[in-house]
Length: 96
Image 1 (cartoon, rainbow, N blue to C red):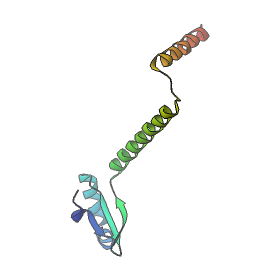
Image 2 (cartoon, helix red, strand yellow):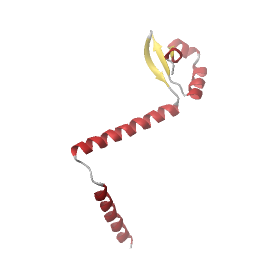
Image 3 (tube, one colour):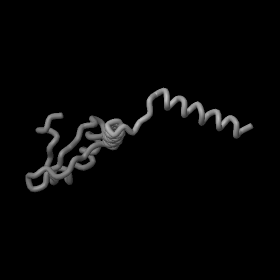
Image 4 (cartoon, rainbow, N blue to C red):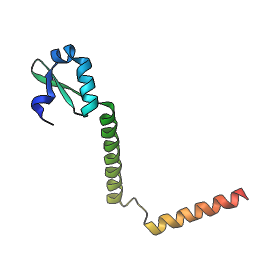
């Protein structure tokens, strides 16, 4: 993304809103809107926003997992499968 084309003043946004929305949706590029010469807002299409939110959620999950591993709060693969096997067996017995 070239910042020279991605930065527009708020007056440009007001005058060309429909065109900008169409372009942002088609190109998936982010627009930085300035107010009084200072960057204030980022405009992006909804799909890009959703992908970014999903990526952030995944990073949070990874970070949470790393913290649990550091604290020793985890099970080995063998322990996990043994626990799952017991749960499955219990569920099968309850259904009978």
